[in-house]
Image (cartoon, rainbow, N blue to C red; front, side, top):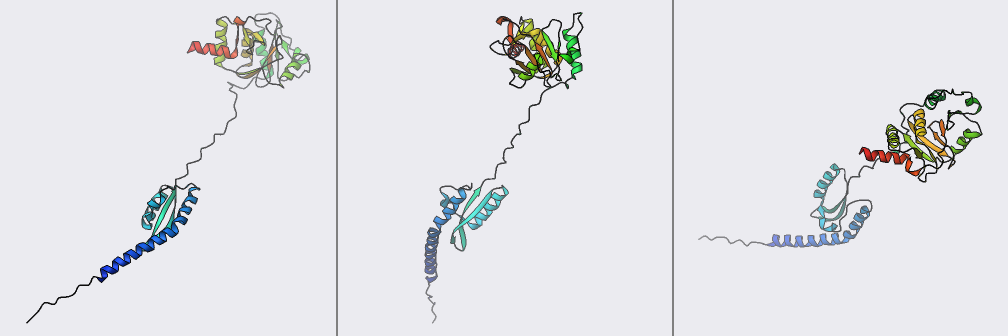
Length: 289
């Protein structure tokens, strides 16, 4: 007679696994809660250094293997990253991962370049400028220039006694030369650039009836527009300054090297026949547009 053996099944291993899992959860929770505050404190300390830390940081905890993978990718993107361990789960650390975006390149500061004077060519020496002055201001007259005046007076006056050329080498302490040298120590009444555009603007101003040019909005220092054009023709392109003691006093048109042409004032100029350097340019540009 035979019989089938009835083996008793044991569920002990299952109960052991269940017990182990419960204990592991409790151990992990205890470790997590014990270390969490410190880990968050570390994270927010790094936040002060520019690291990205979200308010829901603890919800984004990672297994260390995941964090290391992300860490590699972040470094490839030139980010700085740090891992902050919190607890251990089944032999692997559970961590926070914080990172800092790559630094933006600092904007290059443009070094302010000193303004350079635009000149077509270097200024002529005084002896050549004297010749240009004579050719321009003595044209149409039979009077010959007295070049000796450069040595005795420091300037040459034109036949009509309204303009005088003063080379940069003149240092007479009195007269119009002394007046100019004193004025040059102060602030110019006006500065401007003698360009082709200005030449055209002054030409247009003359064609529409302007006879005078003022160097201040109040119309205090006013000279003949024609003489102003001649002075610029002699001295050429470049940066100029205008100096004057005021109403009814000569205006000195001075180039960038100190050569000057003094021009007598227009007494009681008619405002409707008077413009300014800026006004002439503005009017010309409005017509040209």
